[in-house]
Image (cartoon, rainbow, N blue to C red; front, side):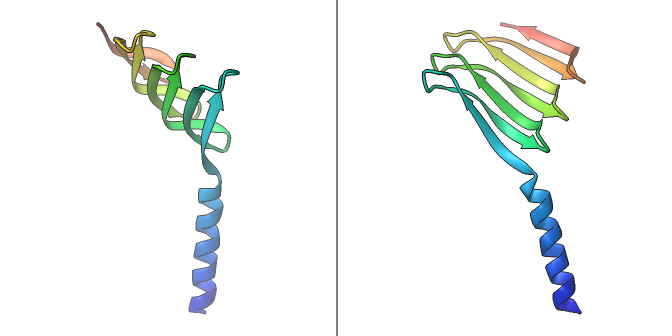
Length: 98
C-alpha cells in the first residue's frame, strides 16, 4: 500500500512540474529577446526582456500572464529609466524615474 501511495504522489508531482517550464525567445539576429517561466502557457514569476543589442530592456513579475509587483525599465545604454508597481497588468502604486 505504501508503494502505491508513493507512486501516486510521485506521479502527481511530475504532472504539476511538467506544466511549468523556462521559456526563451530570440531576435532574428540570434540575440536573446525574452526569458522567463511559463505555467500552462501563461507567463508567471520573473521575466526578462532585452533590446536587440543584448542589453536588458525590462524585468519584472507576472501572475497569470499579467504584470504585477515591481517592474524595472532600462534605456538601451543599460541605464535604469524607471521602476514601477503593477497590479493586474495596470500601473498601480509608485513609479520612480531616474
